[in-house]
Amino acid sequence: MTGDNELQGRPDLPIALMSADGTMGWYMYRPDGSLPVPGEDEEAAVELIRLRPDPDAGPFWEPDQLLSDDFDELHHCLGISRETYDAAMAWSERWADGRQRRADRATCERERQSLIARMRAEAHDGISFE
Image (cartoon, rainbow, N blue to C red; front, side, top):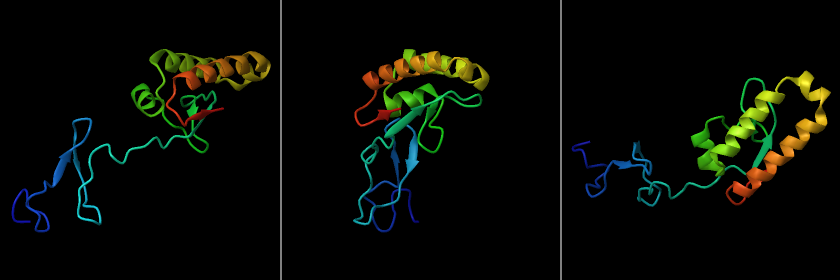
C-alpha cells in the first residue's frame, strides 16, 4: 500500500468507513468493486424467540441458542421496551428454579403468555414468540 487512501489502485475510495453507530470498521470490497454502506445489509436475522426461564442466562432464546440478556442489544434486534425486558428478566429469575416451576406450572405459564403478548405488541415485524 502506498498511501492511506490507496487500495488496489482506487485512491478515490477510503479504506475504512465509519459504521452507523459511529465506530470505525474495516470493509472488504464487494465483487463489483464497491464498498458496502454501513447498515445497508443489516436485516433482522431473529425470526423466532422462545421465552423460557433459565438459572444461568436470560429468558430470550432462539431455537438453538441464547439470544442475549443485554437490554440494548435486545431493544435493537427485537424492539422491546425496557419495561418488558425488565418484566421478562424478573419472570425468568422468579421461575428459574425448576422445582418451583413444576409446583406451580399454571402461574408460570400464565405469566409467560402475558409477557409473550407484550413482546408481540412491541416487537419488529417478522419476529414470532413462543
